[in-house]
Image 1: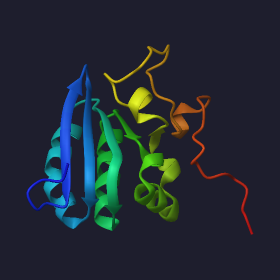
Image 2: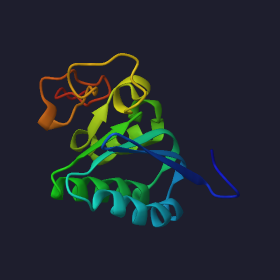
Image 3: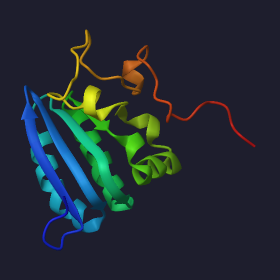
Image 4: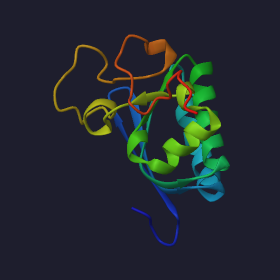
Length: 153
């Protein structure tokens, strides 16, 4: 998915009122600089509904994480919704979310192929089709990748 010498790529499509942005490659300063403007456009509308699919992200640094946090803040300010899909399938994203303590701050979807990405659902579900871990979605199944309250010595 990485094109013409770039270390990152993105693909976007809209399903209903949800914008799905599939990210791949390296989310570093180059990617963040290039993608932030488009993410700002998407998150600048009233009540944005955004899914960032990170399954194919192979590397993420502080600039990439800052881009994700910026999108989250902008969505929350507009009373919208941001979901991260495929975190469990991207070890680099999962690791950095854990190390920074930001894992619980994001609405995580368990199975991006069937739950998180609208238009890819195998079976319709009674809720919005997403098993999420964000605090606003308590009562839904928790992800096995979420940190527990128990510390390991």
